[in-house]
Image 1 (cartoon, helix red, strand yellow):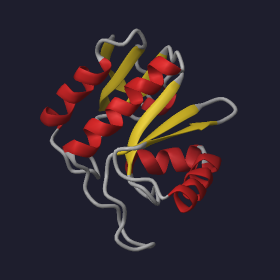
Image 2 (tube, one colour):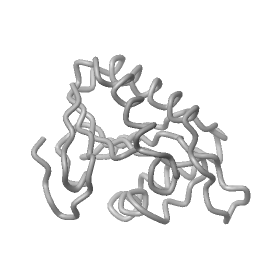
Image 3 (cartoon, helix red, strand yellow):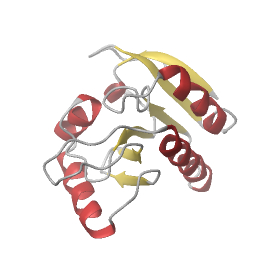
Length: 159
């Protein structure tokens, strides 16, 4: 079941937070920057994972911290250089990443997940194209899916 909410996704009570990034992303803007600041260990582990595994767009990487789980959906092209900015997201990458997320939710018996307007900020995609994909892949799952349709800093959403 998907419930669209307004608020600050970092205050979510969901079992997992999911968001879109690029392989080798620097997490230097938007939600990724907020996650980097709140969970520096996650960012360090992600960078190490990218160096070791060389992941491709469309994959996902699941991080388990002491009190939070974060799924990094690789929706964007990687930076062209080590210090470059990530490329744009693509509908193909979002499709693949959401399919992988749905499989993970079912396999791991995840009860709730929160995600933002995926790939529409830095990723540059149109929300009207991405939103139906979220409903397609996650709408029939037994898990509660909280879709943060509008960001309001410091406001706890009514999940």
